[in-house]
Image 1: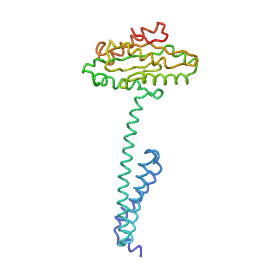
Image 2: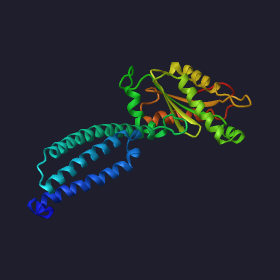
Image 3: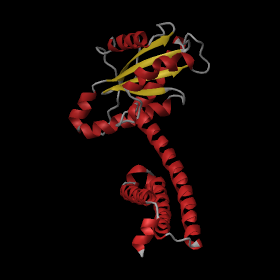
Length: 274
């Protein structure tokens, strides 16, 4: 009896429905096994899985009706209900997943320009964005006036690592970054240039305000206390745009040169600049 029904049905249609059922089943297994990897708490991926499973039930019902040649109204109604519900869930899950994917891409892009230890921006961020950021800040003119770059090199930081260990030294760097952010303005940038060296980008300040910048750096340094009561000090080199140039390389070179000119002087509790 069943053989006759199959012969009366389109073999191509049966093959197509069977293939779709197997494809849906494969995708359901794949999506289910990876649901926690592909979306926060598996929400988007799980909804997609449920949508695929619902569509799979519709395909199975459709295959049954094709193979049996049945015109059962209940089966026909049920399969379309499952198809519609599955399509809705797949679209909804796709929206959840795409939104999560976009957030993940943004997070990865952010992590790419952030120092993993201190959570300050890193050298890659400075190289990629300095030229765009400096001349185009609100309140600045196209030539980048009233902007400053400071290079900070913590004095004798190796002794902190040698005396208290690198784990403690890392915690000091974290505290220093937090202190710098707390003492600078909201629109200023703190960048870890490498090791115990940091770069600040300050907007809407000129050479007449260099002492204000140094005082803020000094206040941040003084707020980081070491176990034996020592205080951090640093050599600070400042360069101003456009007075010292407007190109990234020129400003960094000038600030770096001024910072290194201080390295042979004894600094106790104040940050200085030549």
